[in-house]
Length: 160
Image (cartoon, rainbow, N blue to C red; front, side):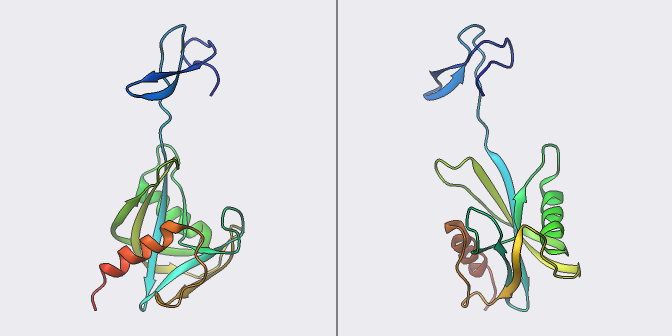
């Protein structure tokens, strides 16, 4: 963003509330660069979890949980159901929120839910090279550092 949404003047960067933020020197408006919300699903079936092999960067060829961005105005849970259906062809029922995951310097906040399959046929779309179920102790190369944390958190909540 280069120009003020209030008055159209060119933005500069200044210290606001202890952080450097884009701000308008003419009208004083401050631009708060909010995070982007994404969702992911740990879909379990018979002790295994569903992963998709990514067709694009980042992480092309590596595996991750079905995930995607939440559209403005879309309920978070509806976004998860939509993303899973689009990427995998599966219908799911959300069981619970597993956790929120974020990293310093990354504008994405990931809401991860645990879900089970209620219908559909596993048919990966163009975003995935493949999709398959894996035992938690026999995983392929994971695409992101947070995938291992998510899996560990899910495993910690499973009954022996």
